Length: 308
Image 1 (cartoon, rainbow, N blue to C red):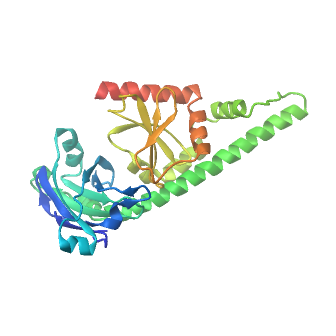
Image 2: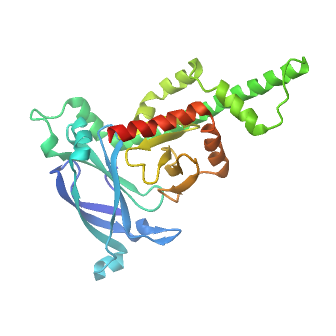
Image 3: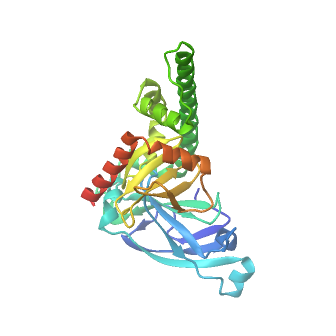
């Protein structure tokens, strides 16, 4: 997806070789800068490795249209100096210097991918054919990964419902024979179900293996993935300590929410266009009421602290 009506990248061009520091320039349509909250003169910028996983993300300002031509055409120019440093060179080396720039606007569907080559990190004999092919198909693979993650989440939800129904039926049968217990508190019932259903089993493993490539894409390489629920990934990053929080990410829906630790409360969103429902917030809170899941979260923070 190298072309878009809403944005034009003047430099770099697709597959152009750049240095660790280079200029990003072009123009963007005003429609990319307008959201339901008003005009926001910024473009979202992400760098992706050859696998299509994001290893660096930020945003940069766009100048309001200042020339007559730009005002008449309804577009704004941008000129930004980009620098890759030691903290992210490792991820670029993994791709043998072949990465992609993703630029996105304020609304869904406003995005463009530009493959580039970081010349200093390209092997002397050139990149291997597998990396080159992966580099060419980043947009298509990401699109398929998003579809697969939606299917993965739906299949896990079907399995969860099936297990919960079976669990409740078993309790009802035990009660009818006089051998069971009556549970009035719905939350307690959910907690008990989560404890008994928390370990991996053959059916869950089969679903995960079916969508293994998409799950590996969710990475991200720079974070510690400590769990998942209904298509949401729970991730702790190395800089999630001030104040302590972790991220709830749903790739298919474009959700990136921050939850506080250890309170497990919704703090804010990276992107206010894509949010989660109050029921989903409650489900996430219930998930971490399970001591086993909370310990994984605690360990995630410890591991990131030691590696940072």
